Length: 218
Image (cartoon, rainbow, N blue to C red; front, top):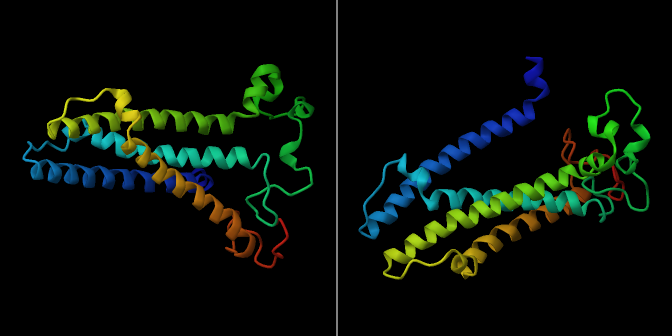
């Protein structure tokens, strides 16, 4: 029980993810077959739906925007500030995260890359941002791949020639799908950063103490 308690936030979020993904799959399957019926095309089984571009495009399109949000948030907060926001570093001051890890290489229990140093440490000290950038690129590629097959299927069903992959990448449909998700992520980050200056949520580490002044960092 202690192990579960100490990891409850991740466990709860992953359970919510699993339930949402299952609901997404079932709803997507039904929506796909409804579209097939309207276009007088054969319907598919729920297992066959997993092989459609419709499913994979919808999954990766959303993951892409979320990982982009986190990558941008992690990287921008290394150089930009918002006075009074707990989501930002303090203006005109040094933070603990600014400490050079090489000064702590001899301490016990530090991560192995800190003890190793060199290029391994250079990668490790930027690994969080790099991980989110990599996840964004993988999701972007998945969106492009799944979206292409869904786009190509639509074109063929409407009597057009099967398009090339680059036709989809250059299409307004692909970029409409991308920008509609990206803009929502950027505005949600901005809302979180700015609203946290003036509003509070007691017991949440994402909020300042309820009694803190608006200009205080924490």
